[in-house]
Length: 477
Image 1: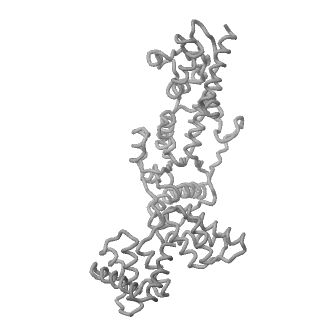
Image 2: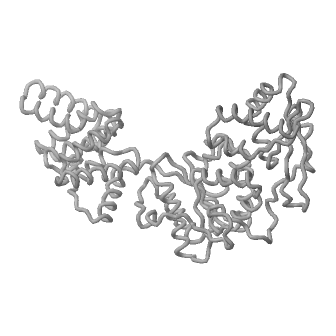
Image 3: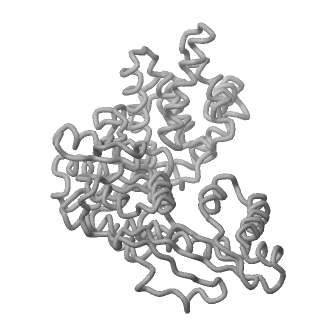
């Protein structure tokens, strides 16, 4: 019988391997060992209680079909769970048939993870190759993501201020945890790194760790496979500042959330700082346990919004200055007007423009920027705002934007103001009252009059019609 159970399980694995990704098979099925086959019941040995529960939750249908295909309709599967002796000197097993999981689970036998007790042995570092004698925590922080390189604006002022306060006094402010959230590419990861770097600068003796939630999840899975969950937890409990990026990646991962819950509690009770980032506010996170969500709300939840025009220009100028590059202001402003979705795309457009200039040996001009932007944001919805229209019109007629809001009745200013109103009505969803407010604090009747005037001039004045056509092109790029 000793050879038959190996053969049966080997046949099962061939089918299972064809139905899973390589990584899933390697993680959840390669460590399993067949033990025996008696009375049409195949017993397999799994490394831990969690391992067994994961198989039952995610792969039970596949297992049942495979076993019955090999052993017939009456074929059954039993698990033998080997405890690693973390709480006992003698390893032992329990048997759990798949047909009656709940009735056979014995809490006194299925040993829980010890989440709070200390450990006198060397604790492996999940970030390095196993076997190192000494724990050396590499913070995983990116030196480029500092507060110095972070451009502050109305869109991120609260988050930035709270982050700096945390960095100056980690664990001692009301912002614990500090929960940063935003859409992709708006700077939450940059700010998280900046907090860690500033803590390292202010408190060199403190242990700071930045880790992406995906990496945390994978390390936990590895710890389950290697039967060293306790060491995994103890390692994270040693941190003075723990920064978890993209926490939404553990949504739906109940066991990972359970472990993180205990790590969170331990650090918070010890006065250690937690910084968490997500793509959603805590109240909008799905698949996260209520007890964990409630802890996310203990401190401060601060969002980072889409940067306004002034902030986008400041971000570009900061990057250009840092790289030691000269670029005309009109080009910088043009990029800032065109790329409105997030900072990452904004910097990507800048890099593309510099690459075009360097590779083609061309000067960085507005025309080159237009050519590059046409390709770069081909499928991107661009923002056409009243402010943007005013800037285009004023640049075209070489007048100051402030002049539009003045009470002057000079012919060129009045004409530019009327054109701004006309294009704002045509290209934005703003009300007539809002348009008038932005164009010299005029009422809606004045805006209507301006639109009629422009329409009449288009029909009767050839030169004016050319003005309008050129402006239309510039506004629509």
